[in-house]
Length: 255
Length: 275
Image (tube, rainbow over all chains, first blue to last red; front, side, top):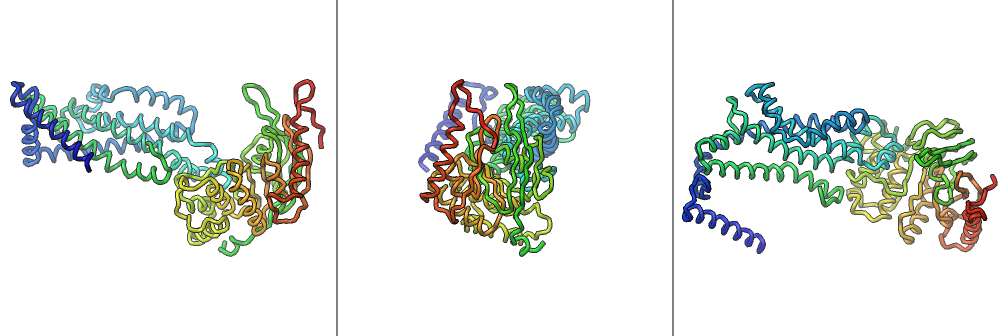
């Protein structure tokens, strides 16, 4: 409790100093909007519905892209772990493309799909899928051979071995891989929304982009906060239960 | 298959190995792990493989489990060639090899779930029976990482027994445990062997352990792995680990083991005459 109050005091002082600096040190509100303006923007955008609508549009894109990404990534990772040839080929591609920031796909995505939802989806999937493939592949490869052998002596083979032994045995890696994939998906989508203007829905990235065009930095900062909060909540809501389960069952402290 | 027939003790198997040899090829050359092993193991017999590390005793066990392929010679269980791993020959490893994503009863149920003829209710009942047999009542829902080393091996034993195998293969199962836990398990394993007669192959490098548990102790010599000598243990059961008669037999085997390990004048290990 004491620690919580101390942290709270720190943030209160930080906000106060920011507010004071913005109002009394002659800094233009374009360069440093005071927190009160940011709050006013957020309140207004929440009231007139633009913020809620944009969040909905963005979350929908994120979830679809993310699910497609792990839907492709986990089975592909299993295949690259199983077949040496796929590991050497698809695995190498994954390793290479994982290092490529997915915003680099924007020019091609625009040419291939135009200013459409498909282009958005493509960029998010490109952001997610490689990390998930690599994590799944690695997760399956590091399973101690003893697990396979123990399972085999009890009569497990084929699909049973895959779904009842290898998949759960690699769960810690798959969870951390999908978590990393989520972080990449979120970053990719923001980049995509800032770069690609489309008519089928205005997301948070678009709002941020228009804030920039209008020099409305209170809007930009406000949306940055929204982006942070969504990322934080997703982590807590989606991944914390898995991590708690792993911690309880496996006794793991990390991942 | 009914619950009663599942819990009944099936007749233990006999095992026959004829001219079994196994070579491992590594970058540094070929290791002759086993050379011309001929061995018959009777129904319900408890046979211990003893020898220095690298003498192929674990490899032989793994051949019977069908975890090791590409050997020459013939390996049969009940007159049938060993081709793939199966529930009739379950294995207990030195490391517990329990699945961390399952709780205690989940691990014991793993092999039972692969038996199609049982209902789920029966499976749980069978699993509870074996957990009771190894002395782990009340730990059904515990997670593996919460158990002590001895308890983990007890779960592993219950898991190996649960599919009701006819052969139990034990690869240094107690080697990583402390002495006190081990001695408890010797007593428990003898009781379980008496209650649920299995043919047991037991690999160990602990001679006293082998004498305490086995009906027969086979002494292996390394490079190439061969059966050097065999000792019958006729002491009455249940045997106490600190029994005097047992200690003297163990001393005799240990003496033999030392001659295997003693380097000859040219610096290599002494040549071993075949049995």
